[in-house]
Image (tube, rainbow, N blue to C red; front, side):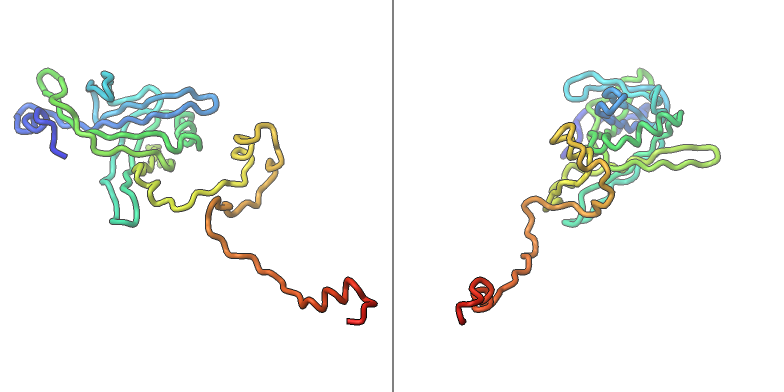
Length: 223
């Protein structure tokens, strides 16, 4: 897909600054309301249209801090979907805990590349959408002078590699279908997911000799 014409022309200019913008649309989860994180690398802010809405991205988010690194997109032909890792530096332990909410898995994540005019600060052309995926897992790393959360983001195409989808024997999943039914609350041994619609190995069938069955039913018949 070709770059936006204005963006392509702007890259040939002298007084420009390149930026990377990341948007993470976190859904409502427990005590936390829905929240959209809009960050750029470095400091300052940029504004451009996202899905027809003027959206401002800044170098620091009041809740989740600053953007660290963004890995290169990795993929393998026909074996896995593209993935990327986004690192965030949360300012508080509460923000770290919030980013690790299990219900945040699947939150939409988008990454753009763009340029701004150094003199006016205006975005030139239409930023290029580099990656659109879903939040998979979060990993927290604590060091002496730093604390960061690595967000593993998978492309939406990853669902094409899911040949079979199972239903977990967990209390949360069971009550999402049958509210108030707590039969699985103490279940700790569900190590495998039963697959719905999957081909399974046929159970062994014991075949008895008919004469044995008849002798058991009619012991005095003289068979």
